[in-house]
Structure formats: C-alpha cells, structure tokens
Length: 261
Image (tube, rainbow, N blue to C red; front, top):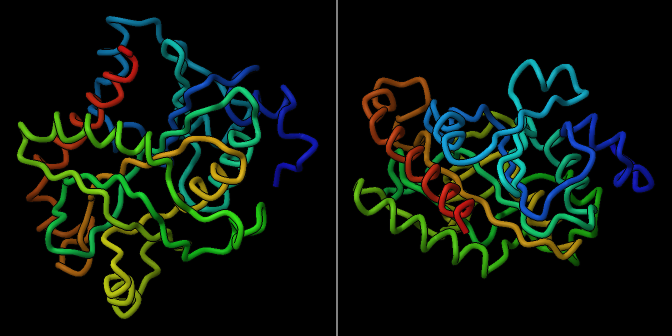
C-alpha cells in the first residue's frame, strides 16, 4: 500500500506510472489496451499527435503493457484486480494536478438488454468489495460517478454507437473481488438489486474520486454474459467477436473526440 505521505512524491509517480508529473485528465485501464481499443489505436493517434511511451519502474507492469502520454492525457495501465488498482486510484485521486479520471474496461452483463459489445457507463456502483473502505470512510463517500462527466461521455458514446447498432446504457454496476469467483446465486442476487453489469475495479475509483473531489466515470463494454451461457471462452461469445470489435471502435472514437477538445 502507498502511504499518505508518499502519494505525491516523484519517485512514486515514476515507479507506478513512468511520469514525474500527472496531467489534468487520466485514462486508466486494468487490462491490455487492445481489449478496449482497436489493435492499431496508438498508430492512429500517432498520425495526429505526438505519442510518448512511458516506462514504469514496476518491472511486472512494464512486461504486460505500456503507459502513454498523448497530448494532455495520460493513458495508464493499472493492472487487473481491486488490490493493485485501488492503490493506483489512491495515488491519482490524491494528486492535486488530476481533475478527471476515466476508466476503460470490460464487464459481464447480467441482463437481457445488454448484449456482448454493448456499453455501460454506470452512475452508481455496488461495492461488493471492502478494500476501498480501507482508504476512505465507506459511509461518507459513496461509489457514485460524476454526473457531468458521465453525461458528456454518454452523449459521445451514443453518437458513435448508433451506426453499429450497439446500445449505450447508464445502468448500475457491481464491483466484485474475484475473477469468475461469483456463484450463479450471487449473480441472480445482483440482478435482483438492479445491477446490470459486474467488473473488478470501478467501485474503488468512484469512491476515492468522490473522497478527493475528482471527476470520475467508467466506460465498460460487455465482454460476456454468464447468466446467458456466454462466458468469455464459450462458443456463443466467440460468435459475437464482431460486436466486440465494433465496441472497441466506439470507445476509441469517444477518447479521440476528447483529445480533439
């Protein structure tokens, strides 16, 4: 865990992110970039902007994925799972330079009207995890995204998703601690609680961002549907590969439009 007194030290920023200073806007991703963007996203943005590749001091992270600075935005790989992600969310949320934090990831859908490739930009996340409450008071700071940022991203998402026939929703999400560790009974419980999608990190970001007065929003694309026998490695999931690629294109266009101002 990064301690309070260390958060804004240059050594910590270099170790975790490969930068000496953070920027106003930060985009975080817990999985490889080509799981949320088209494979050639860096090259495409490189035709318009200077792309700076950042080397972190964390040897484990650097072997999995790279960080980038493009224009006035940092693209930071935070690694999958609530433990490592929350530590890095804390660093970002505590830093005075950071104002907006946008999360890009994947989620499992529990409902009929969010199919593979569809996009959810949740306003509220049910925190089925306890780690974020170790950083801030869980009763005082709820995992709610910033309404203005969410509305901005939703408007852009709907504009680009329309041509692909993809849905964009603002349904509730739940964050769980274990990858594929949920029972069918738990998933059905979430569904009864009006939760449409589940991921592994987002509640921590929303809670910490609220605690330190940052704007945060999460864009998650549906990667699988466990209650519909469409797990990630199933044939049903593989048959919807095109929807996944179209969804990546939508997310890329959202972020590209933000860079353009």
